[in-house]
Image 1 (cartoon, rainbow, N blue to C red):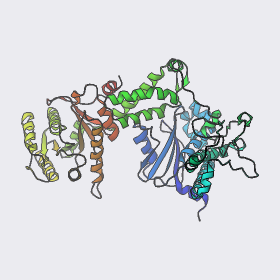
Image 2 (cartoon, one colour):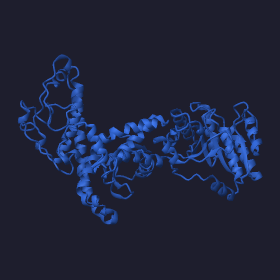
Image 3 (cartoon, rainbow, N blue to C red):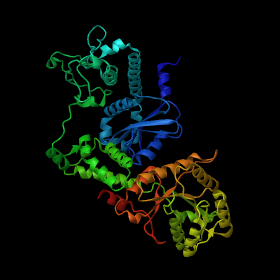
Image 4 (tube, one colour):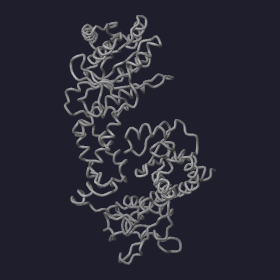
Length: 578
């Protein structure tokens, strides 16, 4: 049989503590982790302003993390996503408190940034402390699971009595109180208390219908709204609460984070005058009440400007995660500070993460003796053919020869429509009529372009709804056979939430239908049409980029061929928040 430590090794793959600047301060691994999920966390979550989430799955791994905003630290745990490890959040909290207590002077002074190697060397001694924390938290979790199993196996008679039971005494007959517990044990006790309160509420649901609940006594160790009573298994009920023994706060470095400043007190809602003063004066720390006061109005502003509801919620959660616990300087408006943080987040989202420079890439393709190819896809009626023609006109204006491949062999009149556009802008069209295999038409068009020396091939595809499986499979086939240099999704700036669904399903279908052995290929960029018709309701741009992680390459701003623009993120963000 495996030892306890061996089981732990199998459960957690890696624990990492890093600074937001990218410096890894401490790391402990139990196995070889493939694909570097911590780097993926930074790239796809933190840099994409999704830090309002607390976990994500990358390949075979699940990654959970917490932030320490004031010290700009990130605490990360990586484990196999098939495992249900319900103690990870408690482990992260304990590691956070213990690590900060051990190295507080260097972390607060930022001296580790001046001499990172010395700090990393010193922090290597944290490994032994971590192993103790891991065993402690795992033991507490196992005890809770055992209690849960016992509760489920208990008889109906015991269930009826559960609502009025007194807490079980500790060994020797004396009640267990938090006063008698050390820091590590106190952490375990709090975990058990929370879980047992939930189990008691479930198991006593039938009993409460038969008998009145026992008289409740206000507890002395936490806020009154969490549902715990004087019957807690860790604080004995007293006839006179005033005679209950005083509970001293613990400062053990591995205790629950709330222990560091004493037991939590009931949080009172601030008056308008207090909120006004906090908004304008004082070197203060941003807390949940501050964010609850300001973020809802910013979220409503975003949704009113056509940002999808789920995207607006996610952005606000990300700002909340980044600002909670941070200090604001004297005479700095708190509401403006939070708005500035959201503005910076929106700008980061809309700023391209990859450089899509079509003219430069066309030049590289010419050096390789081949045409540069762009495939256009999207739903019916969004203006694919029109905006393809605008891009052809723009390319021709930059001195490049362009061939349009008419691969919409499904919709009647599609080829004729392209020929009308091509006659106006002086760009030839390659077509093979209707009811043909679109992938083969594109292949023949690219071959013709290479043979005749064209610089660029623009591939027009049939409009299709995102749920049409046969047509989505056909599109995927066209992409994977011809391997275009750029795949552009054409969507309307008007559509809002429906545009998110279209983009998500198009990208998913392209990846899903990848032939065996091929590299999965999705959407590379976005063309947003009818941008001139939406006034200041420009939120679809944010929603689409946030959902796909791909840049907006062009926006259509009119009916003429020259009405094509690149996106200015500052103008879009200003339109959303002002």
